[in-house]
Image (tube, rainbow, N blue to C red; front, side, top):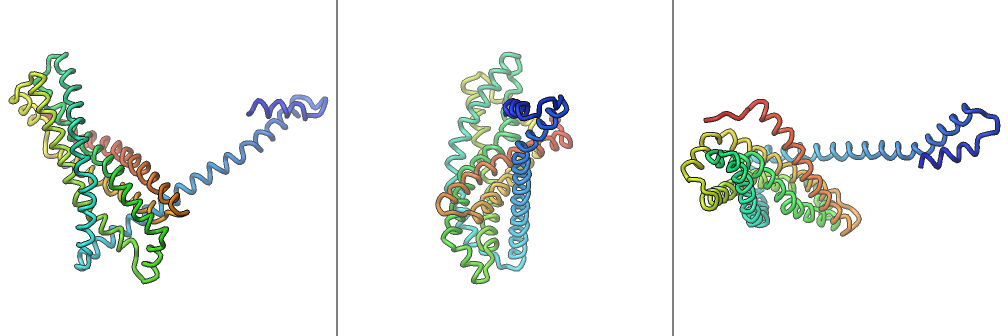
Length: 301
């Protein structure tokens, strides 16, 4: 596009104007072409910041209502149980189905490498730590974003376009307290359990593959795993999974409550909730991993 603009600028420049006149016209043409792009980029940044600000406001309001209602004994536990059962029903079986092949893949790759370098005694530590530190929290985030987050966004989006949310506001009921806080409580309680399920299935599958098919003795596998794995690793994994679950939930609720333009808007809200939630979880995982590596370095025994 710049070549075409430069060519037209040369043709439109006055005869005898010299190189200075050509340069002025070229700069003017380029400025006119780039001005809409700059304006579009500026508007995109402002829109993203506004959306991020609304998401933070929703998170603060949801946590405030949750803590306040629990202290005042006004929290709707029945809704929390219903939402918790819904989250379990859409994530438990997929968690098992994903954790089993994940554990097999990690065990096969780690076992192949340790056999080549003659370090089969550390196969348990390498495979187990890979599942606990990175595999289980990220699998949990993917399951929550793809299953629970999409379902929550579609439910709230359908309520929004049917004007049920506006009806709640008309009756003086805050939608954040009525719809978001119970889901937040259920997510905080169930996310660690889902992470523990993924860890158990992944480590157990890796143990079966290593002992049954790769010739690793059960004693060396368990001893190496116990020498490297600590309770801090488990605590970090559970903490990361809780943070990922909260991020996925808040993004899904924000997208669902702001859905517009009928069924198409609900579909767009679900798509955005899944994509943004998973990407945000991956970004936060990068930061947490770096902080853990700095302040909690790996130690043997």
